[in-house]
Length: 498
Ligand code: NAP
Image (tube, rainbow, N blue to C red; front, side, top):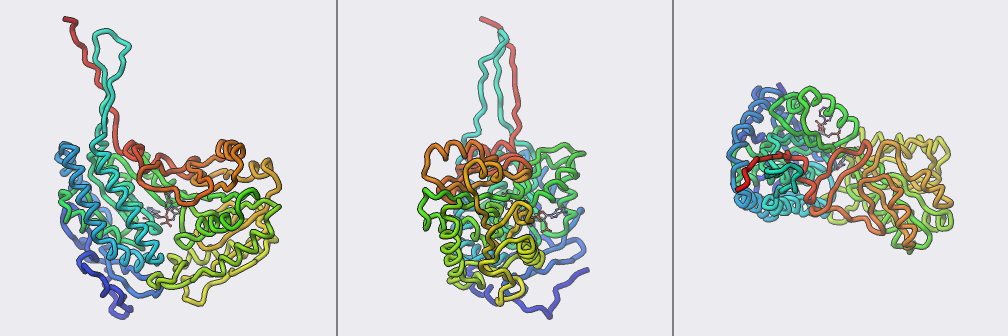
């Protein structure tokens, strides 16, 4: 049994929490705060300093089965609640989240490492889904069909699918939960969340606020601990839908583990976004766009531009200005207001950046800036720029998930079209050009679930987020976000003519 190690340094910035009860060191299931059955715990550390933020229960199958039973028990009453009443509870949750914005952002920065300003932005983004789906709860209308049979009244209702499990990653510890949970709860489903082990406190704070907002016991549970939790959620027939955000490799594992219980699978998986810049676009604005598309969330973003395609006519000038802009990025602890780039999540993330740089240089790329671990600490990596990247380099086809910008030159549109799509990934693409005809041609040809034209920030509660190919199945957000958590019921009633 693991017990807290008193020799590890304890995070001192927790004293800045206005509401200390938001940092919960128990899991929340069936409306109760609980330890693991065997009392074991996992330590959660701050990637910037290595200090221990706290401990959470190391739960496994038995606790998961109890959470599923609690969710099944909560389901009938929650689905029968008037949509207006479900909406009111979700609205109260939204308000509680917004009222705790500063504390939630601090918890996120301490466990995830992202700059505080980005953490605040994520809380707004995350709360936006709760607000949006509170409204959508009231609009889950069915349809009356213009029938093909005489004397029949035909309609289609939308019903909640049942118990939903959400398995989420560490890079957006709050938003990846609310984007799923708020939609499922609005549709009338209870939700069990299994957050990433590196960032459980953001999830547990959401549970604390859900409890305060009057979300009934069993409707929103958070289980922390081993991956056996995920195995049980996949294998248990009472769980009717799994909504997963994470890597494509792990998505495949969950699809396999769920096959025997044939459930709805919503998958938000990896990306490998191209960023495309044509010479007709303002170069400085293009540089600003590339900087944001590559370096937000310190590069640990499924939407991060992994391949920056720049037209030959502006290639040299772009590299000069991009290198300058990258040189101005401050690397540091996310609590420092000047920080642009925080630590990476773990050692393997840093090792992957090193491996991608090494591989590219060995195959003929040019290192223009950075390329090494940063002196700030073991999990920091220098914002890096490599040029002359070619398709055979690993960075051209694998997700880097770190602050390494890979720039490649293209000559004309035909050459670009050959290279811009990816055989496996199709989440987000960024296109920068002012030529209307080119925008129309290329948005058609880009095989991605989302295309951002002349901008980077495009996501939010009202729009469908998701990828094609092996970047995912289904969409989150907007009115489409409810589809994963509802079933259609077709009712055909015979009637006699008067
Ligand atoms: P990950 O390794 O796939 O982990 C995601 C979740 O799955 C975590 O909760 C993790 O738990 C769990 N998990 C990992 N291996 C498992 C296994 N063998 N069995 C059961 N559960 C398992 O992804 P990540 O490193 O956290 O996040 C980065 C990835 O997420 C990137 O590929 C990124 O592109 C993708 N992402 C996609 C989106 C999107 O919306 N499309 C958004 C954000 C991130 P542990 O914490 O215990 O490992």
